[in-house]
Image (tube, rainbow over all chains, first blue to last red; front, side, top):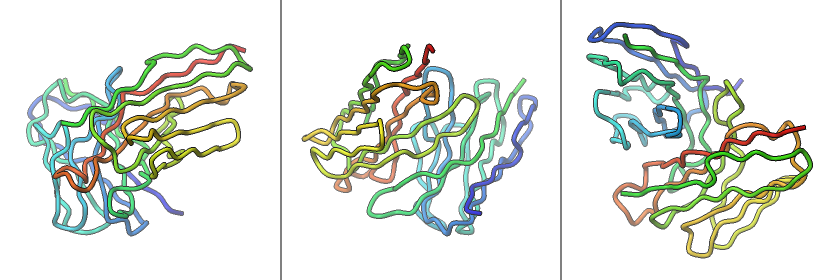
Length: 114
Length: 115
């Protein structure tokens, strides 16, 4: 089954404790991206990757890191989480036909930083 | 930078009525994509429009892409309770810009349907 998986689905952590949210897709998509969703703000792009070893900042990259060592995986790293990073996070992937196409979203990771 | 605005933010609709949600970008888009997110779910792709002035229909949903490729609309006829959710538009800038890989989403229109 074609899918994007994220782990963990729920996470409660404390300020400053490094964490990684994993994202994996099995559709051989070139493009992968992370978004955060907050009430009234829609989906805001954190980082995106057009292909292996190629990553770029989205609109809200501060406080986050990513890496794309393999085509299927795109982990999101919070080196020192803060309460303002409490949010719902979505990973997504797509083919690229010039520009990013139809985004396939993962189920989401709800993160709470206390 | 590019900004994508959606109006209205909320839409309360009586079952059977029609409504339209609008999407406006500050820059020219390469394409426009529409997504639907049910409460508690993740966004699901509905459609992509690429050409200037393009119109596409999916049953009761009609999507339009403006002539200048800076705005779009989603019109739903005879709203049903299954239409409940938040509708997002999204688009990458044209490939002539430096940020054509970036995908900008609007804040969404949350639709509530009253039976």
